[in-house]
Length: 286
Image 1 (cartoon, helix red, strand yellow):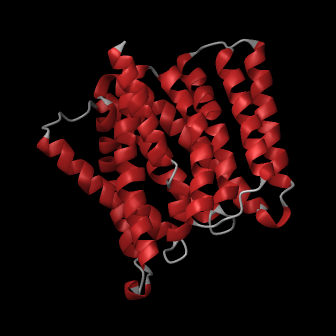
Image 2: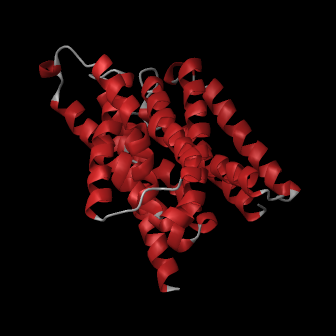
């Protein structure tokens, strides 16, 4: 019981750290290109992860683990950061956060595909209802959003859910922080190459808020958050702790309003709340 309680606490801390990712990315892409931001944040996190692996003398993963680590890297190291960076050039972070409400559901669906589970029909009813709510919101927001930005966010959520589900499964054997560290090391050669290829010509012109945001998404969103998140999944249970993601849109909307002075309309809050209810219902019947 004590371990499960610690798992929930660790998972909640991870979710709170992730909640700052989209607002920080929104600030960073004002001065950095999406490709440079995605690649350099991965390089910084990979170097820190390598230090952890060396200092704690972790064994190398087995050859059969490389495919799963590649999926994790593709989903949460490359896919989600890159697609959200492109999306946040076109939409506000407050608008993008509404899509995070689908992340627990997408993660659960990939867990179903990997685990071969057969949810009850009610699960799919709640899943479809939540998806329709988000689709309707995205298509009716007018100037607050864009079709391409919304589609990029949907794709980012799908890849993130895939990376979460794969990483949660793999963490049962390798350990939580080890999974994200090895995934970062696997992607390091590519990320170094990309960052050098798109290196900004005038770094002196980058504003201080963009540097702070780069530091946040590199250290906290890309590494520290996953340390707490995967530890929480391992100690408290994937199904239970995974539902803490339901709180992420609320934390994110708060940050977008407080730090970026972005408009957080009642419609955003209402739709987010309805999506949370749909995801909670889907989890009950999973």
